[in-house]
Image (cartoon, rainbow, N blue to C red; front, side):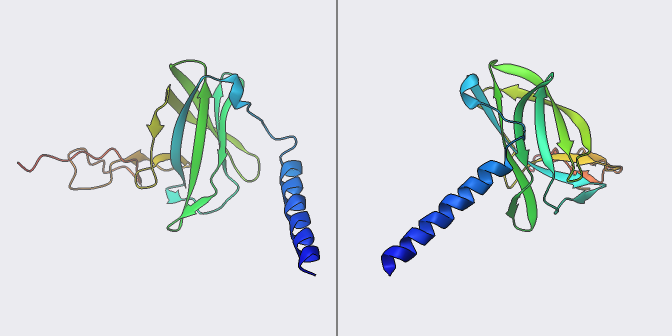
Length: 164
């Protein structure tokens, strides 16, 4: 009986893997072995000034028409969704275009990213912030030297005077 249960369990695991692979057919693919360098980016997405908590948004990085990085905002930590993105390149330094694809397939170009080989941009505690809609990025801490009264989304750039 245990042997049958074990076989059924392994069959279910295989079917789940197959379904995952089938669901990715037709999606943009990147072949990591085609590239010599990588960069990691941890980011969060704000929509109209509010932190996005809805899965289905995708971040993509392009070198012209070539896709060099893609990830979903699907890592949930402390109530927020993060994207853990790997960007690929054959250059040490490069500038790439960043796009967000909404859950209803609307493509929004949101700026550029500076690629630097083997670097890490953002973290869970201090993610790179991307925003779409009417949000204004900047320092929103009134105690900071570079406080921006117009900013609606903290972009992690606040600077503080030395105490000593």
